[in-house]
Amino acid sequence: MDWQQISFEVQKSEVDLVSEVLMGIGSISITFSDAQENDIYEPPVGTTPLWEKVTVTALFPSEVSKDSVASTILDICDINISDALDLKDRVWKDECQKDFPAMQFGEKLWVCPSWDINPELSTEAVVIMMDPGLAFGTGTHQTTSLCLEYLDENPPKNLDVIDFGCGTGILAIAAAKLNAKSVLAIDNDPQAVISSHENVIKNRCDVVINTIHSMDQDNTSRCDLLIANILANPIIELEPLFSEFLNSNGTILLSGILEGQVEEVIKRYSQNFTDFKLENKDEWFRISATRKAY
Image (cartoon, rainbow, N blue to C red; front, top):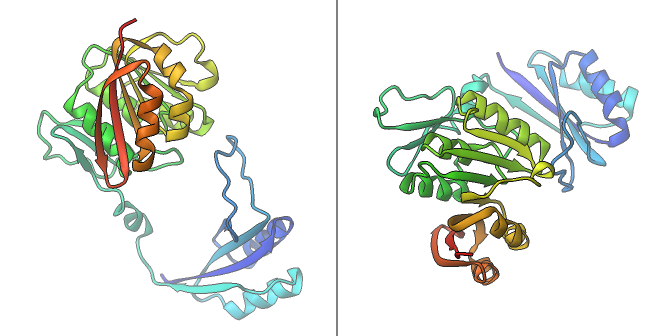
């Protein structure tokens, strides 16, 4: 079955009325997107915040008259069509899934979406089940890939691990599946805490991994490996906290750092850390270092 997609640019206050009219004349789905460039980051759980100017896009069966839709919206809402597009029939689920294949990191570590668990993987393969969602981290970004490759090369066997800024929990799960003794996954985004916990359960790692919001980190125990795949500015600001979290001679793994930020990060960490090592993918760098004895 073919479809047509019809869009309208409206004010925030007009969204409800336009949506109700579109559904009333046969739209099978409606999506909202930013009509300008005003990003909304980390909305509260259970909320649907909107931009001041919104693109409302409705999907109709191809037999519905575009002119009739345009006339109705113009008469009731005094708004004109901003865009219209004919869509040939495709299996949309399959189209989306093509963008998220199973991926290998290092020698043994695999990240597989639920629809692509490869039965031919070796018995030594360590498989993380991970579907794309609201939180950051499926392995497709260079910063996450760098951390996964480090864990594959340096399995945290019998170590206490903290994943700070855990996102989906992918790095915490990797550490747990590579035989970490305990893993604490921390994030300041409630969506990420929910997503991480769900993925931990899906991967049967809830005995090893504890997921918490950063507001609850006050009584955090020291660790042997701290992973922070975030951004350079918070990495620099959080150095005193990370130094406090790590045991003597423990390892810190920092990612999300651009080439021009590497020197500043190393300078900030030099007082409490030594043996800095760098790896990069394109413009993104990973820094590992050892906590000085205290």
